[in-house]
Amino acid sequence: MSVAPKKTTNFSSDQEVRWCPGCGDFAILAQMKKILPLLNIEPENIVFISGIGCSSRFPYYLETYGMHGIHGRAPAIATGLKRVRPDLQVWVVTGDGDGLSIGASQLIHAMRRNVDIKILLFNNRIYGLTKGQFSPTSPPGLITSSTPKGTAHQPLYPLALALASNATFVARSIDTNAKHLSNILKRAAEHRGTAFVEIYQNCHIYNDGAFDFAKNADIRDEHTVELIDGKPLIFGKEKNKAIQLNGTSLEIVPLNEKTKRDNLLIHNEECSSPAVAHLLADMQYPNMPEVIGVLRAINAPTHNDRMPDERLPADTRVQKLKQFFNAGETWEIS
Amino acid sequence: MTYVVTENCIKCKHTDCVEVCPVDCFYEGENILVIHPDECIDCGVCEPECPVDAIKADTEPGLEKWLEINAELAKTWPVISRKKDALEDAAEWKDVENKIQHLSKNPGPGDE
Image (tube, rainbow over all chains, first blue to last red; front, side, top):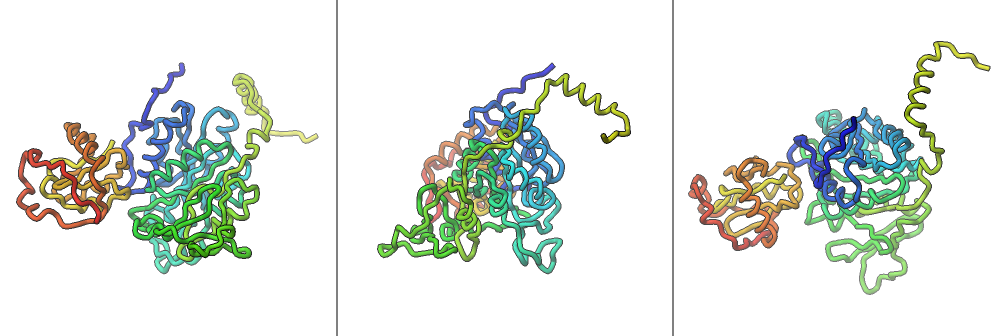
């Protein structure tokens, strides 16, 4: 007998939320709870799938369906679910360790296939759950419990990876920027196809202040630029700087009466080529302001659009499974 | 849920809590701070910072009145995100009971 799940208005589950006090994950959860009721989707038609790590505790705390999967494999589980239940809204919650180390190949193939899932990558540039080892996004030289002399290698840049995988929706937001994050989450939810969102998330315990440049009220306006579709990239506390394309690079130009407005870069989310989005993803602190917002949002056929519907009635599936299990231990190749 | 500032804060107003809040959801009155319940993300980092134990989770019984007070006053008071000195006679008021009669609904200066 199936029992209809209880309808909920605030999407809070009965589980005690267990992250460290001050964790950015609380901020992301709070915004998710704010946008879910706006989507007009019943809780029983929403599924959160995660891998392993602090971020991956997310599904427990929402009154939806969920699955705490195996390390790095959430995109595969989500792909399978979306194949057989295209009516569900499927989210993947992962982190820089789960999604970019053991799960990197899962992530890129889900994106290149344009599976209609929403992927949230909480990037805190550290392994928090295992007590502070360096992650694939740790900056060079970061001293961690496993790199006492500092990390030696270049980090992976999640947005660049998503663009290289031809993700059809690519965005970045910040855990504690409530208004911006809720807007980006809602847009991701409404995108048809893979929506990839990198969220700068502060690990209060093992990598505190990693994103101070983008969060501290005194300096963030100088070091971040909000992308607005169809508008130039203007930033700075006095809104006195802009970005323009010079040759094959982006550069900062002062914004005053002498500035040639026609030369400024105008953001275009729907550009079919990801080339300019790659340049935006490459803008890095401290040389350039880092972008927040939607880098790319294009329409393209989804995984399910491109694949035939292979769903069979349940009794046929069981029969086929029985035949398969009882097929013996040898095969003849003809 | 949310965290709420309760009676112990009145006439003390230590501000250790505001410094650690990741979402700047404390608002300053003349002699008390309050938390905006819609902005609080329930992370709990402020709770142990308070030297007079004034911050509590609203899941504790009997705090409905304080939740209302926090929600009402946070709407009009200025935000405070930087630590400042406690009120001058904070030490004298630390263990005084039934301080609610002294609650001022006047706004404080906030971040200056």
